[in-house]
Length: 437
Image 1 (cartoon, rainbow, N blue to C red):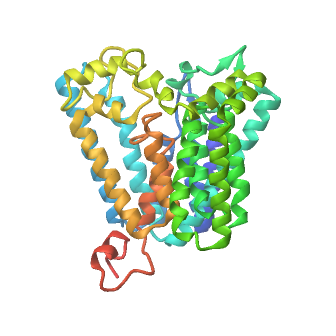
Image 2: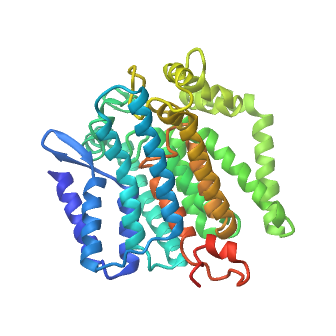
Image 3: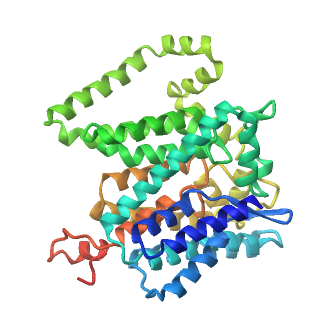
């Protein structure tokens, strides 16, 4: 009942503010970042299905023009083709029954994308970026508050998270509990790795301004603390990769004395950690063996992949056998031998649709990177990189709630008109949403 009331209040807020583009955009983005589950009888389902109906009502009520950017249509075409491959693979090699639920579950992302494209079509690129940042900040604040409450009242947060955010699939996947409470920080998510990936998105969005704008430091610090508190290998390996990307992106600015000092400081800290690794590890081990365990992956990153990717003991081992038997088109988006479909985007895509499906996804992300490179900034490149990086921990590349708001931001961003595009550069004008100018 509480989740229904929460959803109704949220819808009311969007409805009241529907004529205020700023408030509406932020609230619409928050529906993607913060996704509670709704109890209907003994079943819990994602709030996204209710948003689909509500957004359709908004489109009809506002008499919105059915105008969709070329970039968004291409996303729908890529993912629609992927769904068709999955269905075909299931029909040829999969088990009978259950495919309708998988199709609806994946299809909701495409419907939501089209609805958001229609509702947000008039918003400028600059405002869209501001509103995404504000929604990201609000979600970060919510996660921070929830984490603080979890530290102070751990038993209370177990009840809150399970009541508002677990669905019928995730409620049996709790692997981070000890003595009836969570042993790692989760925020508003159902697994520490989700909090880790969200924290990496926050860091990715603000990292390009690191050293240039002091206002981003609180967000970076808060994102880092949330990610570190998740005690996830995803964050332990993801943060250094983002740091490396930042260093590479700053090379051309080293003539700026402030950037040079910060660059040298960061490199010096990295070298100091590498040289003093054993001493730091021993210090951490004496105080917390768990923290020392995760810190050790900085010394041997490949060891972090063993639990998932090892050909002898990895949890993906049953999926490897299926991929070997059906490498071209896979077996569809459902388990055929009780295998767990999680923990790796490329492996799960190969399972679902074989090499054909993986090629479609690779082409989509290459196309997206090309568009971002041509008509976006470093923030968007960092976010794209983080989505790719997250796929080696979870199956986040396609039809995944955690990365969906970021993908929607990137796709709608490149589809909005860019002001400073050369008049004679027709190709770039088309890519950057300026085709009609």
